[in-house]
Image (cartoon, rainbow, N blue to C red; front, side):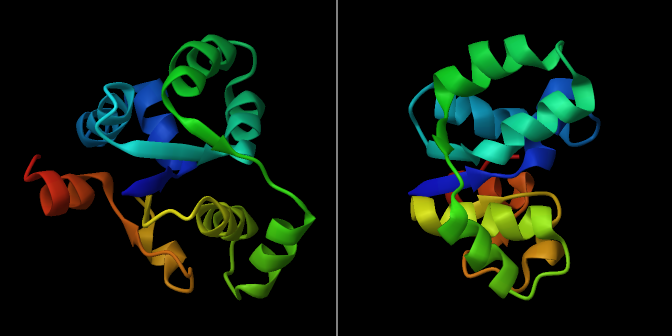
Length: 135
């Protein structure tokens, strides 16, 4: 099974956001150990740099790029995202990246934003409970 990890899950781990950190970190650790095929959309890296600046780079380089695939965006994905009818373009770009990467699920805390996504979304906690009986 392949999953696309939404930006908010990455930010939960980077910031140690409570109460979300535990489940979000478990998802990343499963990918790190090879127990889960996971990717981020390329724009998630840009989002992190935009929000946190240079301090985000070591986390990106040493953790995300070591453990996850990166699904690069292109004109086709952007057109697809614009045609999904989703109200948030960033979320639509995540959905288009998930389609391109052939992900089974998007792991996000904002599942309601993905109602129109062709790839279903689950929260980190729901994903862990549903497939790994954790959390």
